[in-house]
Length: 148
Image 1 (spheres, helix red, strand yellow):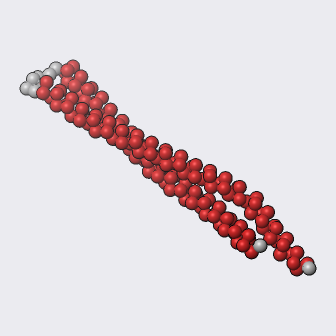
Image 2 (cartoon, helix red, strand yellow; image 1 turned 90 degrees about the vertical axis):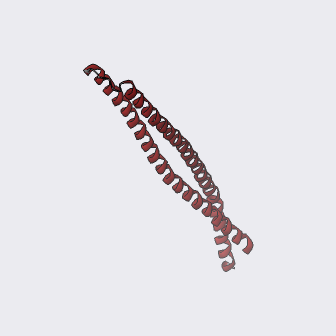
Image 3 (cartoon, one colour; image 1 turned 135 degrees about the vertical axis):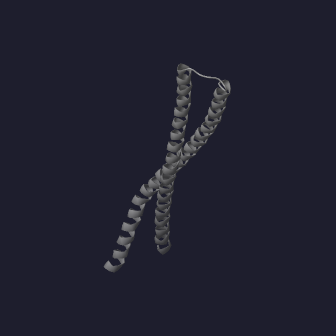
């Protein structure tokens, strides 16, 4: 008779363990899926900001070329004084500084997108692992129920 009670005690113990683990694993899965969605949304926003930054850089490069051409046309075949040449140089320097800032911004956004892609991959992996853990527990519970 003790032999019959032993498997029943083990079975009850396993069922209790499953009952305790199930909500924890489901919570972990939900949290992992939420983190994955957040990572996906953050990546999407960063990609949109990158596209906007690249468009702005392209526009500014074109505007810079137009302003440079305008300055050149305005002073073609004309002698310029030192002060006027200094102003021209200052204008050119400001335009180049602005382009450098925009290029730096685009570079930073590219780096952010790459970093967020890695984060999304990790979040997806975590969500997948959490889902597998829940599925394994469900299969184990099903096997116990089938045996009983």
